Amino acid sequence: MYKVLLVDDNKREVNAVADSINWVVYDAEIIGIAANGREALEVIENLQPDIVLTDIVMPAMNGVELVQELNIRYPSVKTAFLTYHDDFHYVKSAVDLNVEGYLLKPVNPAELIVLLEKIITKLDIEYRRIAEHEQLEKQLAALKAGNIYTADDKNTGIEEIPDVGIKKVAQLANTIKNIIHAHYQENLSVQEIAETIFYSSRQANIIFRKETGFTIYDYLVYYRMEIAKKLLKETDMKITAIIREVGYTNNSHFTLTFKRSTGMTPSEYRNKI
Image (tube, rainbow, N blue to C red; front, side):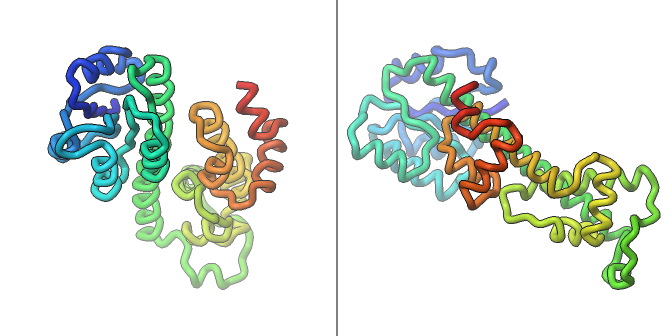
C-alpha cells in the first residue's frame, strides 16, 4: 500500500481532503499530516511516504520550496499541488518542478482520484522495474558463477543451441525477460542482451524462442507496446513523453510500431478507451 503525506496549514481543508475519498480502495493510505514544508520534511525523514500532496502558500516553508527540497533529497517521492492559487507563476513552478498534478481547492474528489491513479500507475511501473532489476542482478551473478558460457566458448564459431536442459532453457529465457523488463527504456540491442547472459545473439534467440515463441527483439517490442498502452490508458502523460518512457527516440518509428501492434495510432488508442 502506498503511503501518502498531506501538507497544509489549514486543518479544516486538509481534513476535508483526507475524508474526500476512500484511499484504501486505490491502494493508498494517509500516514501523516504536516502544517508546513519544514514540518513535512521531518515527517518524510521518519515515515518515508511515496506521495506528498501539498498546499503552496504556507508559513515557514511553502510548497514550492518543499518540492524543490524533495527533488534533491527524495527524488523518488511523487508530488502534487493542492491550492487556491491558479496564477501563471505557480503553474509554471509546478511544470518546472515536474510535479504530478495541480488541483484547485476545494478539491474535487473525482479529480483527486484521477490524480492518485495516475501517480500510483507510475509508482507501480517504477517499483516493478526496481524489483526486476534486483532479481536480474541475482540471476546474472548465478549465471556468471556457474560459468555457463565463457568468452572462449564464443570464439569457437559454434552457433547451434547449447546442450542445456529444459529447466536451464526456462531459466535463461526468464533472465532475458528480466533484462528487457529492467532496461526497456534504454537503447537495448539483442547483442547486448546475449552478451549479458554469455551467449551469442543467435544462440540466445534460439533459446528464447524455444521457451517463449518470441524472438528477443519481438518480445522487446511487445513489452514496450504493453507499457505504452498502460500509460496511454491510465495516465495523462503526453504521447511524446510516453514515447521516450518506453525507449524510443523517433516518434514516427514508435507510431508505426504501435499501429502495427494495435491497429491504431497512439492518439486513436487513447481516445477509444
